Length: 258
Image 1 (cartoon, one colour):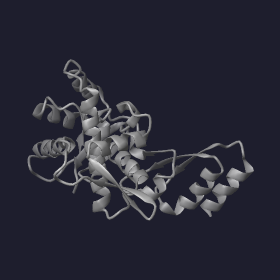
Image 2 (image 1 turned 120 degrees about the vertical axis):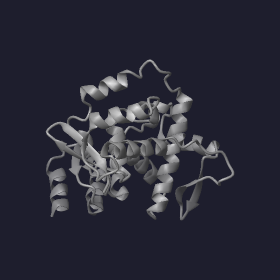
Image 3 (image 1 turned 180 degrees about the vertical axis):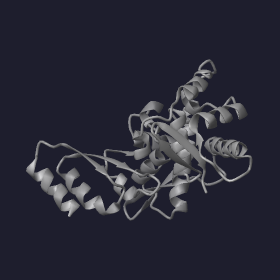
């Protein structure tokens, strides 16, 4: 009924050019396909932890609903991040290296989940793992340029199967990127364990966790890891099922996943 209603709404109101769907359910693919064929722009708000890549790949953009919840960047966190502004900024090549690491992680994640690694699906997955990812910020005009560069560096390779282009990580003996993000997540879990004193995980304010994290590894700069802010980093950890978050008012809390 919702799908039928959506199409009726589009047909009765031709001036409506943009649709925002709050869902991650692949059952809405027929609706989105019909709207796209009608020239409509589609934006999706969902829970990326259980959203369908089959659905998200059809949209012009998508966001995790947690990104839209106010808060998560208290003054204490901003102060911690400002303390690092005097440190060396990662150059474009360093940023690309991190992005290629995320590309490999996205492909391996799809493989682990036994899902299709079609080029478009990989782009969706990398955005699910890091909402801040944008190939344009790395100097690429489009996603395919980023992929072609990764292929030329022998980080990934393209395989054609049934006329569909799939991405695979390159063979082990070729050039690989230094994995930085997993280490950051490991340190995050260590920081939470210290705050819990090795006891049952408890929810802690983002500001408290950020302070503990920066005390452990003062050289860690969230923005250098490809995340725009600390909140994005925590949400990326939650997407990987490493932590859980909750919100009270505008105050965000996080704990180790149970």
